[in-house]
Amino acid sequence: MNLREIESLASRFRQAVDEAFECGAFGQEYPFSRFPHECCDDMCDLFGQMLFERDEHVSKVFGKYRYDQWNHNYSHVWLQLEDSTVIDLTGDQYKNDPIMLKYDVPCYVGKPNQLHQIFLNDELQHRSFYGIRNYTNEIVTRRLWNLYDIILSFFKGDMWG
Image 1 (cartoon, helix red, strand yellow):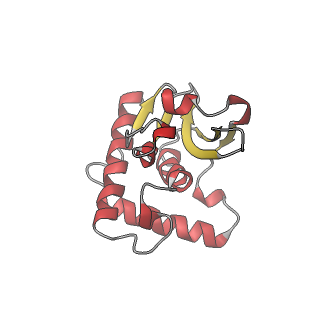
Image 2 (tube, one colour):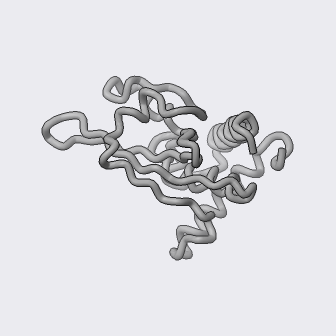
């Protein structure tokens, strides 16, 4: 897939999640009952699965931002392509938070931007993503597949194009 196709797929995926959330399709499923807040890790698994099905290799990047001397910090997770392109479908969870730059972009695909650059490079962890089936915890796997199915039921357009 080229970058334009990935951007389009990411945008349509995020739109599907937004619509599912607005319709109450996630019910009380935490954290999706508060979408996009605290959903970054699961969203990486879910969109990562869509990319995995298209033979697109991605890594999950786990970042931590320490913002004061008392070790208060923020965590965030996003996907990254082999060429370091960031795919972040939940950055807008910080839109009302001045510490997190009031970042309000719901679907970002591109080079690391101001949000991603505040996370400490020495604390970034990169883990290759091999699909939801790769998880060993059956409860987590079942939960993620259920969420994935809900999202796909709201997905618009050709899922393979």
